[in-house]
Image 1: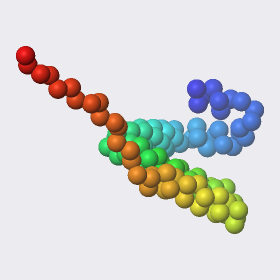
Image 2: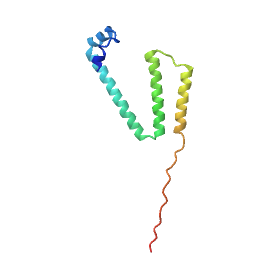
Image 3: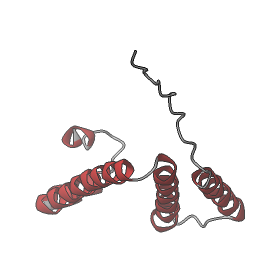
Length: 117
């Protein structure tokens, strides 16, 4: 699929030639991305299965927001504004509020007493 995508006119020729001149670097980067995606999926599923739903959701939301903002700053050079920061605080705060709610126990069915005659 990647080989077909680079033939599209949206990719500049120098980028395609740069990848073609170092194929093993490209393969190594693709493999590292695949390994990281696999590990993040497996570890996310493992963590979610061992934690309560509300806690794992809070941790997942916080991690996605943090990595999203870091990607904005590092990859795109866009600074985090005050409104972005306040929105992030509201989302994490609401997730934390949901996680801190007391859990309710499921009602137990009434036990029947059997009398012997």
